[in-house]
Picture 1 (cartoon, rainbow, N blue to C red):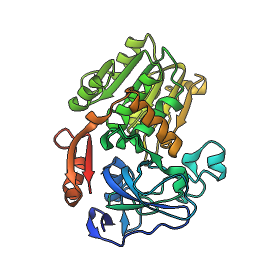
Picture 2: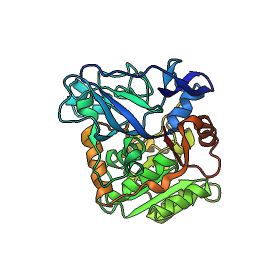
Picture 3: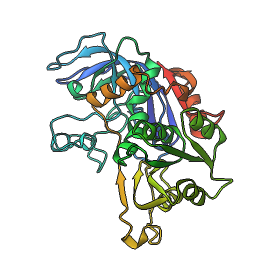
Length: 351
């Protein structure tokens, strides 16, 4: 079969590889639609370490091609959504309510349930082997198309979780720093959780326009305004929840400074280097602030719930697909996506 294989820094392309076989508890899924994620770009650039020879990618929709021994309740030919996080459902982390931190996972601290495209072959391919299939194959309702559910595998689940972990309540004011795909989903998630005011911050007019299209009340261009001052003016002193969706010192610190006392900073960004906490923004530790982090929730029940939101027409993320490529042209897709050319947000890849 064909798969997108990482060979080294900035070395990725489609190759012929061995077709996977299902072992006990696993399934082989024929990939009908996949996409690129910012994490894939970090891998290709060598900023997140994986072994050379790995098939990359972790967002997919497909059709069951083979079922391993012990997998019940599914049939070959079923359309399924597979989350980027594939918990086992039985370990301490899973049974303790933290399936993203599954103990049967990567061996990398705080990334336990992320396997596909990390510690095992991923989904930018014609077929993929899904671990712990019983816990991770989410049947897709017949009336939903692939593009309607694909983003639920990662960015929507991650973005929505920023609002959920942040404890957004009815009537809250929320600011979301960075309106890339995950930040846009965090903004949508804040609205779904009941926020009365959602503020989106970015420096890209295309992304700010998409934020407005998806329901952000106020879009702030940090190039033209003092974001902290404007947020405090709009909210009468600060937001209830600030969601950081980029992973930089500047956005983390700005998010902290926009909180009112007792507010929550919900962090979705992946940080590198040293992250510092300015004591004044943290009110010297006396502001009753709360800081939470979240790894993308996974598992079939999470995917089912998100698909129900799409089926009920509560959310439509298809406008985020700005470009489409065939698998054979995925190197062009990586260049477009990593360079943020032509207003790209998400790229759909059809094997």
